Length: 134
Image 1 (tube, one colour):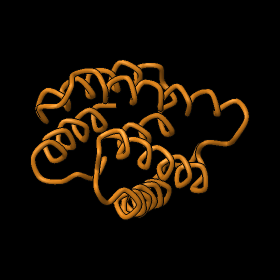
Image 2 (cartoon, one colour):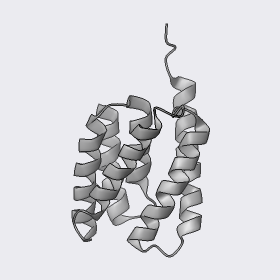
Image 3 (cartoon, helix red, strand yellow):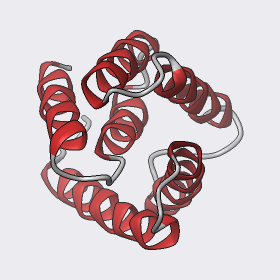
Image 4 (cartoon, helix red, strand yellow):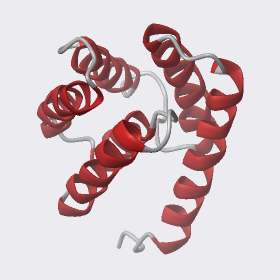
């Protein structure tokens, strides 16, 4: 959880200063899928607030979207196996597309596809280094 918080802090800095890719959304998705803890709601809300403040956007829009996104992931946890690459790719594509649409990005499809590439590499790297459950 500490690593996810550190990654969120770095992502807020990068997303508010350098890039328009939804890095925070990807890390929230990754954290929700991996940890499956309810603390991800609080992290999503606080990270969205800080992202909106540092990006000089309307405060609360990102928080509302991130919390709803985590809620959707946790609701699908009962019906689908969320720790698969297919679920992560599809949810990152849909989540990134609508988040970029809300934010008014100009290259929505390209940025959504790049987001899918980033999360798939991260998820694949995590799967290779994950400790075996005994």
